[in-house]
Length: 116
Image (cartoon, rainbow, N blue to C red; front, side, top):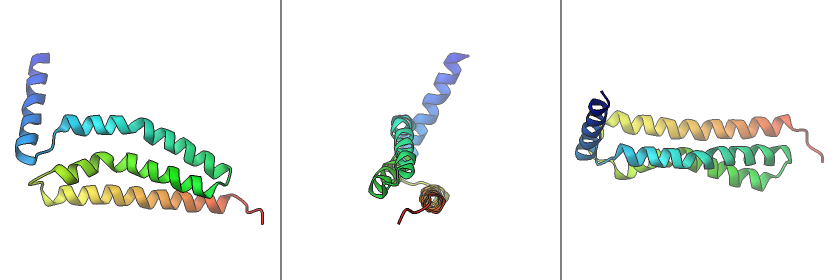
């Protein structure tokens, strides 16, 4: 049973590399490798928001966005012959990430009272 699963995974990986020039293993490594940066930047961004450190918020939100988008950027740069809808989904995911990040930053800015 395990040999069948491994053989199927190898066949799918080979097809993706041959047809689209995208290696799913590399995508997964980038995705999992960015996870610590994703969570750490989220933690630091929320802490900077709580302490009202605007410059730090932008630095950590940029790290957060890069960690989120990195695997999809790999597909965009190295993928070939991808269907048009794949590019649309990637653009939507990155756009949604930017939109939700901006919305979260704006809502947290409104929620914290100003001390002018």
